[in-house]
Image (cartoon, rainbow, N blue to C red; front, side, top):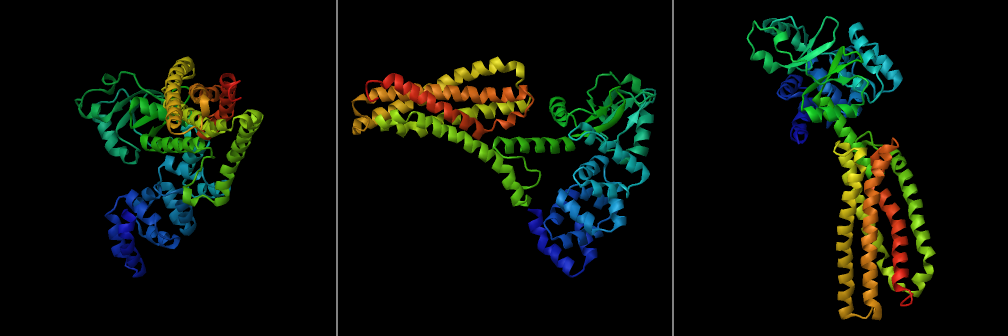
Length: 459
């Protein structure tokens, strides 16, 4: 919205080369707003505007760009300005950029860093992908137990400018081992002569650098913190992870799960910027797999060709049967996958999940079955389409729907747990996949019930 409002004025200033007025206009905006505004412009205009930003503002703003904009600016800007931006970026934002670039480009950019920043960058990039070590920053405030509150506040005034956050202060021993974390509120309200040792209770939550990033998401959700410390296996404080980075991870994880649940490969770029060939490749595999699954449905229908030939009326209800089972399975899969992602359900809860879904499946199936029976009964009042055995057909549909919906609910709820148990992503049990699986078994259930109840009548 902001970009649309200011873009005409911005273009006029660029075309008129009124760079002083342009700079003043941008200085009235926050870095996220500047990034939004620049991202809506052409590549050449992006470079023109970015060059007139003050160095510190440019470095902060750069972190808010999407990867494609960052890459474009790195190509357009001079070597010295690129070096300034990379050296001024926070280590975690810089790592997020470098890990997405081709290896040869990353090597070139690392050479532009100062020796100290290069050491930090190589250290963070040395952690495996998708680990917390890639997210952490070494910019934090650490103090000693023996210091007074006055000492701590003086230290913060002198060294806190480059810290990622000042909301939490970390207490370490002489070997750098984490002892406790203190909220800044505790220090501000304590007497100046009081020692840090009198404030610590040695109760803190910390992450390991080698932990999976999803672990950090769960930890932030559980403890409601703006930052969490990151330690090595011996408890030595290595850095901190802040909530803004975790929000990015949570968004990426949720997006990936949603894509998988829709039976497509996860996209790592915005929808309109993904190459068409890449999007097709990401979807064709699942579509082929589902197509072969639906071929099994056709095979199952063919197996009961004789029954359909003798009672064509049964074919009218095939879409109703298989769609009801697929829908119930998709509902159950959605609920269980999300519960697993939020940590509300564990593998050990499988029986509780199954027992709940059995009850739900029976109730839902009986409800849909009753509606199906009433539909047949109502039609019979005005038409003879179902013949003298309309009640038998109605009961067949009722029982079939009850069975198919129950089966779909069980499949949808148990499949994510089974996939998690064997080490696969539960989101892979997508709604289309569950629906296809239930379609095949739904046909078998339908005609098995019909054969038992309508034998000697219409069959």
